[in-house]
View 1: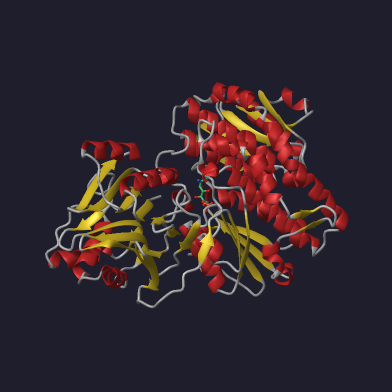
View 2: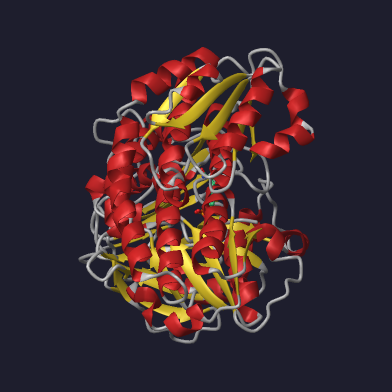
Length: 609
Ligand code: AGP
């Protein structure tokens, strides 16, 4: 997803902008650019590929000197990957340049209007249209021109603009795409997410939809696109640089897989009252009565978060005995959903900025549902747009492939289920037992991580195969989906996850000699059924990789490969059984020579539809 960084202060802008872009690389992009205002005016450089290519270009140009600038990493939406489509885009008449994240939906009609007024476009982008529109409306006041232009556009945007005639001003605005303003000491940094701000300050403002910020060296003003003053809400960023450094790991994804025990301990810290046998979720206390009386719960998310939400569906029905359904946010938002009295919608999202999940949340909330968030990024849009929520507290997740956030989402959904179950049918004893089990999960994950070399060896034996199946039952059916997604998104190997029983209804035709089929075959309540499914695959030549429970030696008679994980209650097992699947995907990607942390075509947070 596109990344924005902008700076105004006393320091040289170029190095700060480049460092900020590098902090945002994990979001996924295909080109980059920056512009600095120096005494001679706007200096602009753009390049295709990595930020390092932009740095090379700037070196050849002798570097830019100036203390105000904007920068951007582009994830192509309108127009192909090219230097001319890279940001910043400019309007030469007014000497304005602009960086933008989002989609201007009515850009075609605006482009026609501007062409009729003599503007000539050089790119295929919607962003250049917005830059020219601001230029067209510019009459000596950049803030007013940006406000006027944004009143004309429909769609989503996070933008920062600057103008040669106002060298001490940056104007930022946001609708639907995140943008934060970091408040330093006589300097300001605007960025798409906190990881590009925390090196300068931990005081920040998250702009809300329709907010505009006019930032100069000696202060800032926040208003709406209708120029109505807005009182800014300053927040304390909880991120620190150490959390977003790679350390001794070769990739963020591996670091974050190995962080999972510590991350889970953070997620659970202070929330499991072992003495009282209760889950303590301060964020839900004010709504406890409404939640406990809920007549239906709808979980909505995309991608990995959806797989966690699917496990939440099993947990809520199993433990809290509340009817529950899980929906792709992108489908839910458009299918005219029925929201009846007593409905609770739970949006699950690591970034808290996924456009479809946010829209689904709004749709359900606007139809009267109580809105909860299960989110990792503090102060993110989804977190701000819910009635209450529970943060994951797993720390920043930099790798595009979500790992520790998945386990954090499952843990939070487990705690929410227990929070409600204990207030409905779960006995204190059962609750205390489950809490005691849950507290052991991080240690069990650690034991799985110690099998990393063995898991790499297993992966090596099948990494050349181009089609994999992932099969599981019950709580581990969504885990199988997650394993397939992990493999697909970073190794580019085709993989499909499904309920183990479903294989017989068609996909078994895919089984050919040596095809790798991963079974989650822990000693759960459908273990015998899973063994039957394994036999069905074996008898057709498939090679079975079984994720089995420690001590289960019988399974070696039917599976070519066995990866043992510690025994764990079925309802808590996905947090443990997913770890070998994450490592299989990681090793497959490394063995195939792919960029694990920045897989092709992918973005960390999909803030466009
Ligand atoms: C998972 O590995 C992917 N990066 C992707 O499916 C992701 O889970 C999805 O885009 C949802 O993102 P979110 O959790 O930030 O809403």
